[in-house]
Image (cartoon, rainbow, N blue to C red):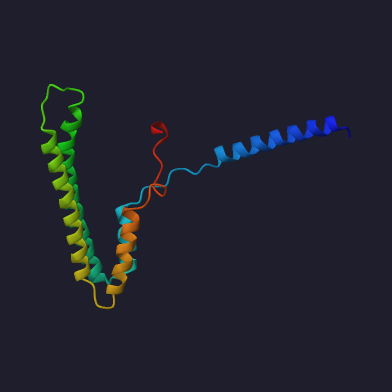
Length: 160
C-alpha cells in the first residue's frame, strides 16, 4: 500500500470517527432533570428522621402550614416586584425603589424566620433517639437548597 493511499484512508477514518463522536454527544445529551417536588422531599424527610405515624401526621401538618406561609410571602413579594420591573416600560409611574427593596428584604427575612421556626417545630416533635438524624436532615436540606450552580438544572434552550 502506498503512503498516499494510507494517508487517504487514515484521513477518512479520522473524519468518520470525529463525526461519530460529535453525533454521540449531540444525540446522547441527557434531558433536563425533573424538578424536585416537595412531596418527594417530605418522603425523604420522613425516612431520614424515622418518623412514626403520629409524628408523620404532625410533620405533614407543619409542612403544609409552612408551605402556606411561604406561598403567602412569595405572593406578597410578587406584588411588590411586578410594578418595580414594569416601571422599565412605563417610567411615568413613580415608585420608591428604595422602599420596594426594603420591603423585599423584609419579606426575605420573614421567609428565613418562618423556615427556621418550622425546623424548630420539627425538631420539637422528635424523640431523643431521633435527634441524631436531625443533623443529617439539616445537611440534606442545605445540600438541596444551597447546591452549587453546576448541580442545578440548566436553563431552557431558548435562554442560553
